[in-house]
Image (cartoon, rainbow, N blue to C red):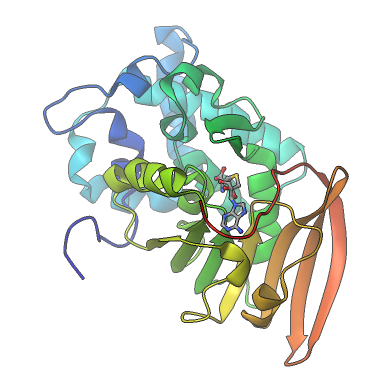
Length: 286
Ligand code: SAH
């Protein structure tokens, strides 16, 4: 293990302040980022952002990147706050999930040309015919996974379909260890590039076929699939810890979100949560 980029836990400021590097240069992604509320609203925006992310504040103060604060970061905080409020209205109640959604700068996971739409509640293209998931559904899936008998405590979770790395970043704030697998090499590389400056030390990215899971690190307290298969792969069911919860879109043209709980060595229960729409789960790697 090298020291580089392996700090734990996540430094919120390192995430939020990615817009400014040590030399004070703005990243082009942020410079062009979101809509531009007037300067007068920025103080209010900062207040909102602080409140929503208060659980992470002590870390924010310790982070070296916190020394520069830029209006762009505050603007994105404000727009993100509105996004989180919409997710709450849509029915996600888990405060820890909402705080994580507030803390992760979704615009930094998108192509600069799309960053103005980053906080619209929609899936957006990330290349290779794949999409970043809709924020509401990311929150909904994580909430369902956290609703366990352990007060939402999650040690080890697995995500199938890293894509650009956004959901992995959100997961890193609700679980001790996050493993995420992507089958498209350039997207695996994109996620690495997106996450590296955020210094999130509890995420491990794997390039491979997620349908096989990661038997070498199983069992997992939670598993989330970000792509829809016609059924949940058996190997993933087997890699779920007893008491663990797996959330997956299932279906073809018509898909539903399924919640599977492992209740015994040979026993799982399953329930349908709601309709959804995801890219397809595919076998093998490219
Ligand atoms: N988690 C992402 C969503 C990415 S879209 C986010 O935060 O927005 C779903 C991703 O699943 C795509 O990148 C696709 O390539 C990937 N995928 C599909 N089948 C897979 C498989 N068998 N193993 C790993 N990744 C897979």
